Image (cartoon, rainbow, N blue to C red):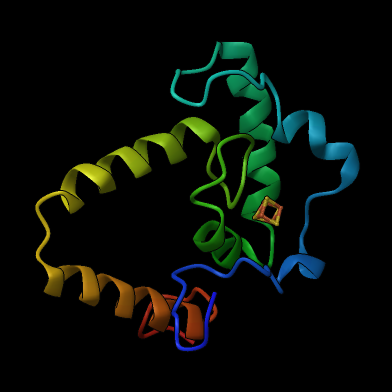
Length: 124
Ligand code: SF4
């Protein structure tokens, strides 16, 4: 990527050293594997929900969620792969009708969010 190009997420993930998930949690975070666009079986969902509970206490939850929307598999940022699939699908449908100005506004908002470390505005 050349200079002056803005990315909407941080591919370097500098927040990673503060993560709460551990290697031994991987079976929960990647339970079921399989198709990201399918609602998981109850047993698989229960494991993924356990992983989300770990995320809920993670100090870098928002940064992780912001930068992993494109991850196809696993639980990231408190969202499982099916939830991220639904979010991407909804965004894609909406974005189809966006004007150039809306795209630019979306990018600016994401950059502001990144600068605030993933915190919504008005919160410290
Ligand atoms: S939010 Fe969840 S997946 Fe992301 S670093 Fe924290 S514990 Fe790991």
